[in-house]
Image (cartoon, rainbow, N blue to C red):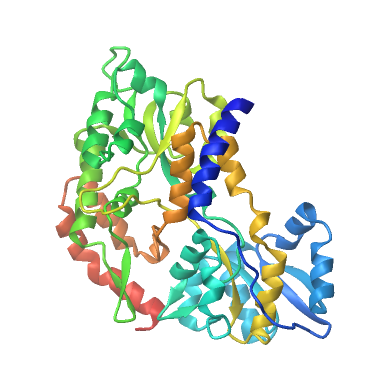
Length: 424
């Protein structure tokens, strides 16, 4: 991207950012003295080395400020659940700071492994965080208790948007998704209309070689229609993908892929979009970063199209990370203060990334809007779905059963898996 374009996008986005966020105020933890004890940062990757590489001297400054030693203790990702539990049971975790993602959180939470922290942090702590981190902390909460803290990480890389080939729309004489987004008409109906017009047999061999949509996930549509895998009701997690919005999403997924044939399934890498096979594709931001170098066309970004039962655009999130404390944590406020000092809001250059990498002004503002307005669009507890669930999905996609019938048959087993996880 040339410097003039970066500057132009940067000015527009800066004005938008200034209208939506303010400075991050320091939180007063009071006097912290850990009396020379060792604080362990537990993760599957060396988070302390990342700090050493990016901000030399900060760890040493933290050790001096809080009178402690800070070390990294690694666990293989596939052993995280077991490893964290073992540390807790062995009494080794009293001064641990645990780096986890949402999958680890929901699998271990019912076993009372984590310490709630809103007993030592007031609402002022959370209200001062960037909006994306406030939203993350709200998602990683349960029954009124908050467990996450700090401004570590960002939601942005694993957030899904629709990328589209501007040249393909222009060559077909069609308005592209940006136009309909600006008109408030970027909906399933309009997306399907455009996808149908751009699904073609270009060489006359009888085979489709250009699809309007590439690899849509069925759960993209569930979230884009305002539904969720589970909802919290009466302080319990309840299966919710049998509600009308979810059933409509499964019906649409089947129709687009198997009946109308406007969406090809199977390749989420982005390679087919890069090679001109797809006009549009839902994809994570990090994948766009890796494939865009091979583009020989102009592209743009929009949210997933709005489903008929949704009131807002969805920005599906594949992963989120935070820090938590073990249930036997001592000096909870001190440990949080250490983490807040080690990982600071200005360490992450998401705004700079957007300015430097957005293909145009509108795409930049959409990226930023997704980051700021994300509201828990994630497939919470998807990893515990029983085998019968996938069989139900196959029955829908093979037209053996309607979504309502197929899901009704497995709803009890899915809820039983949820109940087993939470010991209901």
